[in-house]
Length: 393
Image: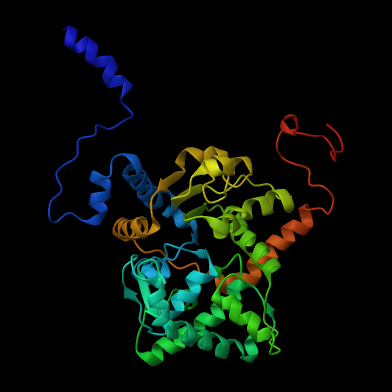
């Protein structure tokens, strides 16, 4: 009797928490089952939560998924192994990437050779032999030179001789990569080519900060009129999020790494609320895989809770947010395997095909509700640091 009395409050106390009692791992276990059944604590537990958040809340009901990419993911082969299957399966709707990831993606689209090496090689000797190293990825210096030449030859075409958003630029560049793949007899090798096929917009938040941008800049010295339209990018990405929220869909951010692409994706909500004066609450779901610490004050490690204070994340959805402190080269293959096993492929939204209409919609809303003078906040006035600019209580 005494045993049952003492066990009852314990059982009640832990009613919301499943018992940690895993099965032994067998030889035939799938990656998805491995995640669900054995990643039960610490960052393994967070990775399980991330996988289940994707499958159970972010992807259902045709939710909009924005993916941000930082770190050298494509040279490690993750474009071919993970990103392309996610894109073709409709699991990703729009992307913000570093230019470097897109530049190195071109190597695969052009069927150039990268090699698995070692991080402990003599870099002076590698330099003398014309070998480039990205940690433990190796390739010949001519891979850079040939990729540069491809970019320059493509962007001298007449369709590139004007300012354009980076999503349109990448779409056009992807068209040429797609054509080159066909000529080479290869497929599903390039993220840019796949984005062109699937109508997935890809933005880069710092267009000049990559070898693609460097080649665009060099061609401007030869009279090229190509210029990245960063204003279009800011408004276009806000338009995608506004489209999602105004049509009753969720808007989710899936962040690999951090950096500028993370902020560029998250700032869509402050652009809508703070700058355009449109009533909104923030992104619905936040998932980040990163090795960045929050205590240094950098954006890469900034938590979803901090993002709530900026209006980037809906405070009501904060409990669903997941941050997994792990290397993206570990997390992304596991999450890709999980999602493709647990969620049926979705119909492609082809947001690029509707880019002008998306921009026109958010523009019309902004011109109707926005202002040049100070935007009147929808937050409680009592929580403001100053009343300057407010017309009245």
